[in-house]
Image (cartoon, rainbow, N blue to C red; front, side):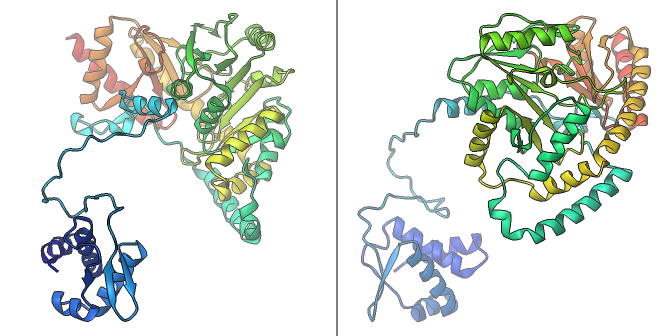
Length: 501
């Protein structure tokens, strides 16, 4: 038996000698150098042959036996199994062996959904802030593209306290972990109902709440539940690209709805599903007036349609109480309300939720059970429930609203020095500001490229457009300190001055 060369190659790849021997023997069996019914040496002989312990040989033989490569006969030894039914498999260490004759290989066909997902992966995606090559910049990067939302100060202290208490709760309930409700911790669902009832005017029962790992998981599951192939689906234009991808992957045909300064313009769309951001249109920040809200509710009733309301950051409203969601006006159970804690708490808290009619809540729970039979982030869910019930969440929102207002005031003040560049959409809440470029498109793209060398970036809002539109920008300011905001806009001004020279 000559597996010495294979063993020498394997010993360079695997730290443990028994693994090297296992792979060398496996390679010999698969490539036919160890023929069917070949009797392998005893563990004593093989140990002497390769200078290893009998225990290592025994362990390698046990692995081959467990995986069906060999068989044993009492009193006779270890033998290679019959290989007539085995398909040739290339060993991971067989990198220099001669290639077998070319055989036409076929790839199993993906479903239509799978093919669309693969196609989306091949399409160019917007580059996150972390992907910016900081070597291009002459100074440390200040990014208005995106940033982590974190807990600080008293909010962080309160969160740590609730996490510790939640851990003790779950230790007491460890026997019940396997029967935890798929739709989420019942305490948290109750806390959400109380919160949206007090602050958002939404009346809901905990059974209507379904928790998921972020709002995009909610939206993706809803798309799979509600969209058939070729269904026309209405999306705001511009809109969040994740929603566009979820709709397209589910086979929906996107209808781009026009916007103006007040948000989406109601039409009698030939559709049974509308995605809308009425509290603060994404990304323009427009607030949908009452008359238009009533109009699209009437449209949904007349068409027998669903409305999915994405309320992503309108709780941070510094000009009075947050505007009531569309769901608060819904008397016919046609609105599905979606929100997330990833922006209102901190980025790494991947918890989103939907408030739905009871029948649809059951369907969403069933879909979620198919993906994850047990709820994710059980500890964080229980901690967040306590955080909300103790009033810490409302106090946290108030603190963050004041802080974001202060940062927006600084941002707006500094941007006034560049008033000739952008037409700003005024906002009174949220984490970002939106603007349309006033000059030639080529100048806008030149400015974006040149600004990198000054260490400042922002989001090109073309990423959100369903159809071509004028150059526009999205500046996310909430994660930056006031000093960083001032410095970033100063660099932008320097960039523009350099371009004009």
